[in-house]
Structure formats: C-alpha cells, structure tokens
Length: 248
Ligand code: ATP
Image (cartoon, rainbow, N blue to C red):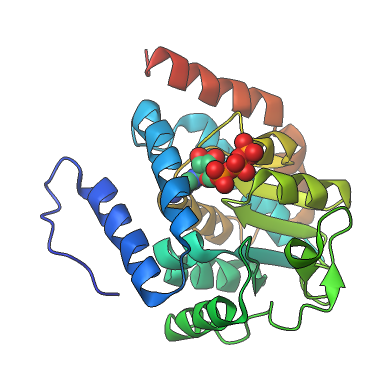
C-alpha cells in the first residue's frame, strides 16, 4: 500500500495513517465518498474511547473469534472502508478461521466491486465472493439486498465491520449470528449484533485474528463457554460508559 511518511512517534500517527488509507481508497476507486464521512464519524468515537482497545472490546473480540471457529460457514463481509483500511488483515483473519471473504457494498457498482476484489487479491486473497449476487437479504431494496447465495446467503456466522444499520438489522433478522465492529455503541449495527466489538477496525481485525490463533487448539466445549459467557448488553454499556466518562 502506498503509505505516507509519518513518524510512528507522532501522537496522531494511527489517525493520520487511517485518514491516508481511506483517502487512497477513494483514489483507487474502492472507497466511496460517503465512506469518508463514515470514517469521520468513527474517528470522533475513537477519540472519546481513548484510541485504544478497551477491555470489554477485547472480550468481544475473543467471543467473535470463538464464534468464527465454531461456525459451519463463516463469512467476512468487506466494504470499501474495510478494503482500504485492513485488506491484508482481513485475508489473515479468513486464513486463521477458515472463513470466506465476500464483498458487500452499500453503494454497489460493478466497477467498485471488481476493484475491491482485485485489491484483496493483491493482498493475498484467493477466492473472493460477492460478484455472483444470486442471493437476496429479505426486507431490503433490490441493490442493497444482493449477496452470494453460497456466501453470506448460506452463512451461519457473518462478521460485518462497519455495516450500515439497515443491513445489519436485516441480516440479524435472517437468524444469522452477526459479529459487528463499530466504534459507535449506539449504532443500530452494534445494537443488533450478537457480538458488538466497539473498537476501531484497524485494531479490532488483527485482535480477532490473534484470539483465533490463540484458540486454534481449543475444544468446541471451551469455545462454547466463551460464547455463552459473553454479554452483548454489558459490552455496549461498558463502551458507552467509557465514552461518556472519557475514561475516568
Ligand atoms: P446507524 O447504525 O446508527 O443507523 P448508519 O447506518 O448511519 O448508523 P454510517 O454513518 O453509515 O452508519 O456508519 C458508519 C459507522 O461506522 C459509524 O457508526 C461509525 O462509528 C463506524 N465507523 C467508521 N469508521 C470506523 C472504523 N475505522 N472502525 C470502526 N467503526 C467505524
């Protein structure tokens, strides 16, 4: 990836790098201009969270890893922001959990779909789903409902980093186990998730991978215990408390 030269010691290093990646994503035709706005909204929450993975988000990342390892068919959904921010990290997470990758866009154009598929392949992905679009998510208008029947359509567990609220709700009402990464604990995506990870995608995706690697040899019973012990409402409350108190 074309990175700018920012010294890692710069106090705003991660934020500047993130902005640069999103901007570059727009230049490459993989991120939409609306993606820039979504990023700005996320950054405000990240600032209030202290730009770090809070303990409840780490617990959520572990529960998400356990769900991915227990799944019959897990799919990691990729949109234009995710493709710009963490393409290689999503490929690594898919490898660590045996999940499929599927491009799933709010503003779907064939050109942008193909650009994202190509970008993921440049970052090591082999099969990338999303171009067939022969399945539908019930309850959404035609363009936004499109998924691959043998991808998200068939999945029992779906990881959706930065999903828009409508589609997150529609996926949850299909009965899928939904793992959401969203910096806003009040968003409909976070609220409808089985596991809401309130953290920046840039930190959360490698963290879920690290937990999946750590749990690779765990028994199904041990994984189920992690899943059962996780409390989504408590995780959302902990994140909201951190934001409102500014970490006090
Ligand atoms: P709602 O679910 O409240 O209806 P929405 O569908 O309007 O929200 P958008 O504004 O499209 O949501 O969403 C972008 C969401 O993604 C915001 O909730 C924002 O906090 C989150 N977000 C943006 N950038 C990141 C990031 N890098 N990591 C994690 N979350 C992010």
